[in-house]
Length: 234
Image (cartoon, rainbow, N blue to C red; front, side, top):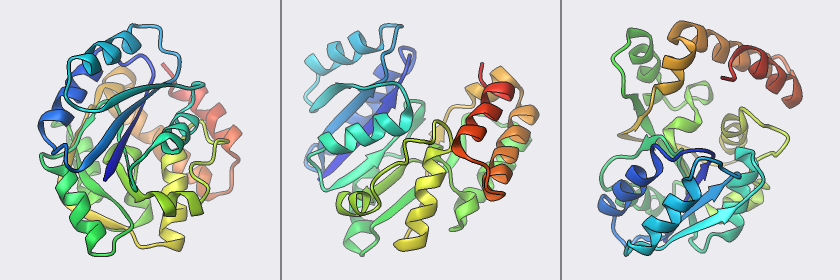
């Protein structure tokens, strides 16, 4: 069984659409629960999740957490009853039948993996960037591609490193690559390009590349977050 874990903060614009999509495009036989882990939203996200869960046949639970995606995802994992964890961003929509695809990979012995990814934009830079998600290399990974991992593997790696306010997905996936097998499912997650629209596509892509470079050069999680705050946070 799969536990879907969605960390949220002020996602009132998207959360109902995502929950509806997940309920419609997966089988309740495969999904143990959908855990929406809220980091103290102020825009009505919590009320929307509760309202949706009351009118849905899916097992949707709202969990409160301190803000910080790594902390939120770790709390979700601790509360998950499924033996497979599926981490999903609130603005990313997995392919229809994603649950069946994940279970097939686990049955093959693949303990972790992700989908390929497409942006909801035809900007040439984003199309070029998403092309790399087909390759099974560390530097091609990112949280927008979603992530499945067996719960026992997640626990062996002690989950997400909560020192990382940003880059937490990549840091954890790097450790997965070092110790376990990681597979790429050829179907696509469709993710929002909204932050690129806010910041500017070329500008944001440059700063993301700089964050990857700084991490490779050994910069601390705290310094990465300072760089993010100076150059990206909107």
